[in-house]
Length: 292
Image 1 (tube, rainbow, N blue to C red):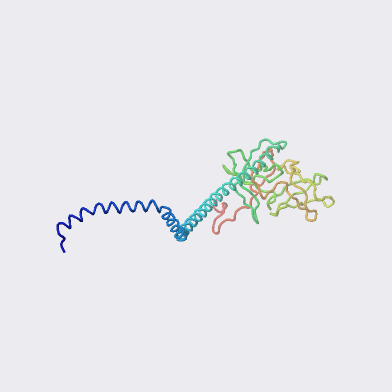
Image 2: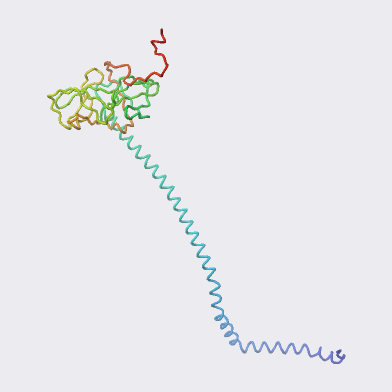
């Protein structure tokens, strides 16, 4: 249906005034009922607040879970750091204890000044051949350091043994508990003489003691000097048991670390070797047979 030209002209003339009227009407209504709009907005917010609360709970839960995981990793990392620090402290503590023990041994060697010594040198134990059949140790000094067979090995507490094998840079010490060790000694309180025989036990025994000798537990044993191998008066130990005539050495032979090798300038009778000779292999010819 087509409108006529006069109708179109009238509609175009009325459109603009109509729109201006509607705009003015809404402006007046907005000004008049602003409280109504505010009330409606508050009512809508109250109505939707439970929905907003439920929507924010999962986010808060996830945030708390993430924080908990971060705390767990932080505690784990701190625990690892504390473990590493504890290991370092334990290593330092062990080193400090070892140095303190070595310092105590060195102080004992410094305080010990045997009379009649021509020369002496400190030596460190580098190997222990202790066992059921041998009681000897190896030290880190040898012929290049002036060590000779027969020299005396001592600690600050007392006699340890004597040098029986000498190499260029190492030496072997026969302990007084070895079965091959036989040391002339004296009971200091009675002046009775005996021989301290090693038998691979922790406490060597007194042998060849006179039957009339009155030896009591705690009697001090020193070297007698007989045979010219050991000088007289070196501290050896104390009688621990009169039943078996056992002697407890002053030196702790189970934890030897630092010794003093002493040359007393003695030329006593020494065997070529106090160590048991190795058995020849089967089929091997002896030197005597080889020279024939």
